[in-house]
Amino acid sequence: MAAFKVNGKNVCSEKNQKLLRFLRDELRLTSVKDGCSEGACGACTVIIDGKTCKACVPDTDSLSGREIITVEGLTEWERQVYTYAYGKAGAVQCGFCIPGMVMCTKALLDENMEPTDDEIRYALRNNYCRCTGYVKIMDAVRLAAKILKKGEIPDDGDPNWTIGNRVARIDVAEKVLGTGKYPDDFYLDGMLYGSALRSRYARARVLSIDTSKAKELPGVEAVVTAADIPGENKIGHLKHDQYTLIPVGGLVHYLGDAVALVAAKDRETVEKAKKLIKVDYEVLPHVHTIEEAAALDAPKVFDEEDSNVCAHKHISRGNAEEAIRNSKYVISHHFETPWTEHAFLEPECAVAFYDEDGDVFILFCRPVSTSDQTRMFTSSGNR
Ligand code: FES
Ligand code: FES
Image (tube, rainbow, N blue to C red; front, side):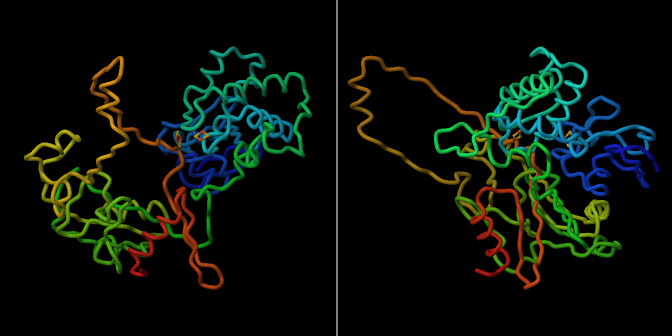
């Protein structure tokens, strides 16, 4: 147990837990974002006794007597300044990193109202933004410093803007102040938590899945495997070739393939239950690269498919041979583009609930809701 202050109020964490979990789950301060839970992204940055700290790192038992500030604890003046500066600079896109950036900005400007670019870079060094490229965030920090020094926010917003005017995005305040809700920020009464047990191997056949011990654990509401899926188990974007859950007899294709799902009353119980699920695998030769997969004797990644080629398309526009023949210069080279991960900071999660009419709503963080809707219908046997 530890007692400390959060945004000027005395609080007490009964159990020892990560500060991030206490701030979000108990105080519901959801400006403190959970991007990675392991000290890598900076989305959870708060200020402890004047210094920035990633809230997912310290345990609450280590914080007795400390003073913590989150974006919710900014003064009204600071809220206005940071909202204006980040909006004016165009520093907000998805917004998930922004409350953490604002905390870094505040900690810097509280000590130094005239930071150099190197000092700004240093202040933001532990925080990732996957959207903006940092230049505009640095502009926002410089602008906030200028306004804080002058003590006045420019009155240059045009309420009658039209197309062609430069305006701040309409959701800038909720993203800067952390009041906008991402799916991970929803807390519903009696909410269950869910998580997938994922494959331990990059390529292996699932021989058996025993969920009996996990189901017996108090607090567990459901443990689901492929055998429980009422509709089609296979989904996919280009082809329906990916298992929702790997069935007994099926192949796992990478370390992230889901083998079972657990729903329980809290996160701790979910994690305990996952450890109680026993999966037997026959480990098979792994396929690590496109080149390995393309080899003539490559093991099949999807053993129901004829080969490891997902699709073959020949694209032809105009007469390339003639254009090359008539070109003054011809350069031949082998070009490759790297595999690139989107690296979004927001956790991939979803929240589902019934409304009073019994209709089911699912909130999730994806731009293509129709394809997810189709997959859910397909796997639930509704289509
Ligand atoms: S650094 Fe704490 S959530 Fe990423
Ligand atoms: S705006 Fe920074 S992660 Fe999207």
